[in-house]
Image (cartoon, rainbow, N blue to C red; front, side):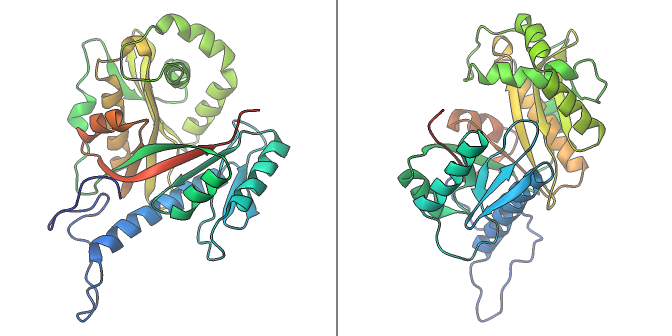
Length: 309
């Protein structure tokens, strides 16, 4: 298990000291392991339930492929609650064949700690594996409200409505940012936003509809009417949500904007009464930044990709 060792008296991420972890008097078991297992199970439930809101699930035994008829393609993941044979490279290959048939990317996503057998099967099937730290905001850690306000003069961090003029740039900013990964200040700035907005009208309309329906929470750091940094809560399930797609225009990095956006999203999740708030980062350097807000490294998220076609 990645992350720091939990000492006696600590709460595991997502759990409070008031959780009942006692077993029978003659068999105390492993209460800390039970707590962590419960946390990972809630995350697994969330990752299985959320795609089903927008896609159909195709059954491949130990694997499930989510297929969406419109919008960006989805991925395959371990089948929740599977009690059959251990996943094999042949299982992975069957899903990949279906993905090729559908004309969608060969992408698999899972939490390694919840499906330890999939890594070996995916590797044997020839997938390229990318590991990312998974962090959780412990349930007994207050929402980092103050950090959401710690931004330069002239910048406001706010939760956007579907009609907010900054919504369009908030949607496209991550696309520009993820094309120039890293934490260093880069070349891409606000001059690229107008063209990105023009070519991503479908994404903007889809996000606006989800915000209007109350399914997605979108937060942005806005300056001069445009979003320099943004992120979202894509939905909720099992008292759980994920902070994702947090990104800053490369030219606007090193101003604390992504940290402020993440803090505001964490506060929104707490206001919704959600028990588990987690996020995945691109690397350990970024993970250390979010540790400043109270997030703790808890597990490892893995993405497996087949060869591009």
